[in-house]
Image 1 (cartoon, rainbow, N blue to C red):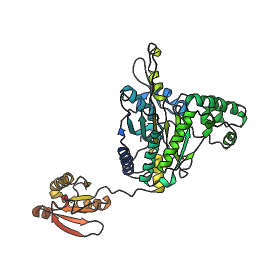
Image 2: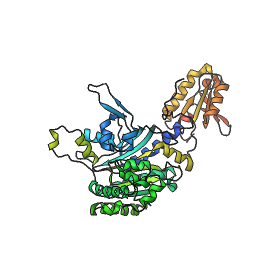
Image 3: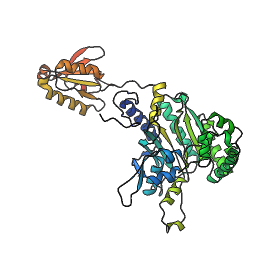
Image 4: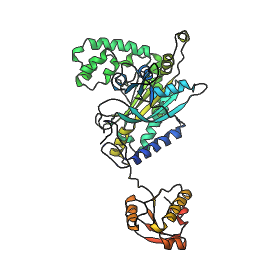
Length: 437
């Protein structure tokens, strides 16, 4: 028997060990989309596969994603082009904005949803194929963009009834020159204490030393207590931007913590970074993460330059965004505010095999008249078997059609919760006044 690949899970109509039911996924997606509609953001649908250099340039070659986690291939072109399944959505969104010239006279605000892929050890809430909901806002370098994104996420938590168990953490990474000066000071400090570092931090010391700040190793964290602080290297503009964001959040009544060790795992961030974290999911504490990445557009523009183009200045554009891991979010919802089970339908139509064609016609007419109702039928088996299916469906009403109902142009209606039965004109259910959800 052929089985699914490790870390690639089916999402079924029923609850399984690895996933919530597909109905809960759909309801969560609709909630998220509803919030984005309210904020005036528009959906884009991006490819699952991109050129590998997009992620190597955009995310950073020294990041864990590019070094260890990407699913990479070569295509059949001549010469072959290295391609990868997307490990995250921002780089692809930026590529689309550049390729289609969406910044010309506009500040696009976009969202996307779908599977991402990372080769890592599967664990609860973290799989090799996982799903992200991402939001990107382009064109403005002002702190109100980050404030809006954070307000959006806060609204999402409130709608889902989980806001009481999520904490917002914020930090400022400053600009690249400020980060470089800090990196030099941090590396100098850590080099003098190399013997106290864990093996993973030793590896990062020469590749991505800022990631050492969020090391999970207790001895490394103890060592970092006396390390240089990034905040001390920020210039006046970065400090003012961060202070303005805090004023906006205070005005919105959104509580936050300043976490000086929050650096994010991707190279493209500058100035604001933020995460929403919880202590309800064990080691998988981060539910949503994002920040500002003003240099990424310029970086990816330059990646496609020919030698003749290199004399031309490359312009960038400011941008900010966030991503939410949906598997992890569903785990948190399950713990804090479980969704009520959704029945398969509101109305189940049972038709005697002799008049089953008329039953099909009635069900179809009801779907046309009442788009708010989900109407289901079973196969043309015995009435007893069909009634068992109706009981299992969770329907509020079962409509019963036999020869007598057809002859009298009526329907028999059974209220499934009480068992009460009655007869009505066959158009009775077509009117919402008679049966409203």
